[in-house]
Length: 426
Image (cartoon, rainbow, N blue to C red):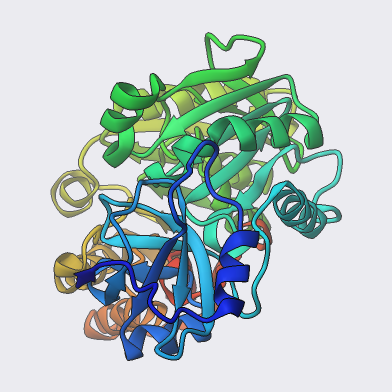
């Protein structure tokens, strides 16, 4: 990549554009300008929200993390503008592409208004836990915002947002009613957040202090969210729709919820009329969370009458060696088995093995729900691995549903499509 000022003969229309685009506060230097490879031009024109470092062909100067970078094509036509991240392989997170657009206070206000409007009619009074901003798919690359009752949790995945944190905090506080705003930070940016911006994971940015889990509503259930230090932003909101489907399938059944975490699927199964649910997880902390969630919902008759059992063990080992019980419904919802592309092949094999093991504990004509949150494994690969595992086990099966993302977690580009689930009667 060349790094120089490509100002000579720069068209006057481009100089005008650069003057209109706002930069980070108190940055008097010339606008950061990039030219990219032909392949990257095509990708950006298609609306993809990432520009990778190895696609940058030229830039006029070194960039600072958090400033705006304007991207031009080979003919000096405007392509896109986004947040520059000097230390990430995703060098620019695109905010806008197509025709030139001011990135100013009005831009952020309009973007938030559009984002909030999408969620306006998704939930009723029985649900106050949901995703407000879903990163790139809502035009906020590397940023998510979740609501848990009166607590908002802002999670940032790129350091490019850190210099703008005060600006977006003020925007959220003025436009979204809440009592507390908590900051969560991806592990890869926690060091720079602490050393350069004095920000820590779990820090309260605004409002009332939080010293314990927050209780919120989901389809009439009361759940705990560990907003300060729990996984994701404190709860797995993305499985809401699959949990609701499980409720409709559970009447009269014995249910195993493997990788149960805080017992979300188990509570829905109990309210759906399951005679017993067993939570299986390697984490004692997760099982204790499940116990507390069941205690929070004892006013629901079916939950109160359902037998709730806990098993602390490695799921693969428990299914293969330790378990003697069989079940009418088995839910297999593991954490991501492929966090990197290099792990993809092994993850596909692991999903197949897990389906085989689950099948060995499933009663005839029982229901098997297999889910994956591995972005590096496509839906087709995952569904194919599960189907082939069942065929190889010699079981007849009826596949009656597959699902993808919940509407508040919608995915607008390929890499965002991580969640998938398949329901089978075997």
